[in-house]
Image (cartoon, rainbow, N blue to C red; front, top):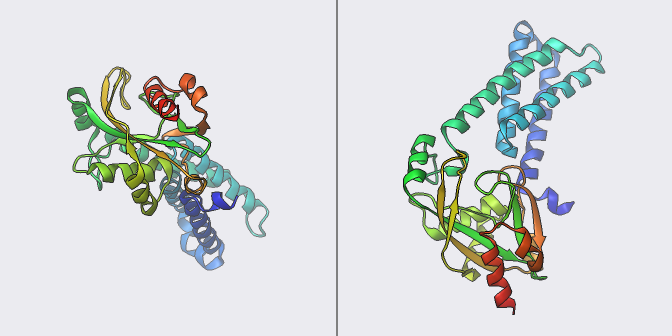
Length: 287
């Protein structure tokens, strides 16, 4: 439980909870209610646009999941007000919340359609989807993977939520961005995929061993079921200590639905076909 409370996502949620409680308390005060009493429904819509946006920042879930959670929060507010003296639960207020959530979710979906969040082209910005599609159609991509084993010799794999290789067990990794040095990409992937702070990933990278260059040919892409994708993957292997395993803060919901430390004998059968050569490489080294 203590390690869970230290994860970046949990810390963000704790911060949000504190902010929401302060804002909600102020909104319920008589002086604040006078200010918005004539445009109460608009205030509800705007407030829940803000709630949705803050959850995007904290959770990085998919839009419909965020919208469902935000709607549930709106319903919770109305139930709470039912038990407060001088207040009452209002279906119209909740519907106003829903309008704001729908607007925020629609804007979020439009942004994801125009820019693929997983395909940021520069450290500080996004490559428009159309440009990225043309790049994928014409060129191979360069990617890096972290091939991590724990003291028991088990391999860390995540079950992918997105194409390509959706639903399969794969080692954590990501594409090298335009203008990004290989070492910087490896550290960024460690931060995004493993929740590992940069201060730790620099030391890890100094010890990691490049396993070689591997071809990955997929029949689909993150944005299209019919667009083939080619990666030249540069996996880096590192054997972790128990203390280093404890430093991992494995995020769930954006790229991976589940994580597992998998014994190599099991991994040889269960992982994606492109991860099986990594398993064989580790087994040969163990032998």
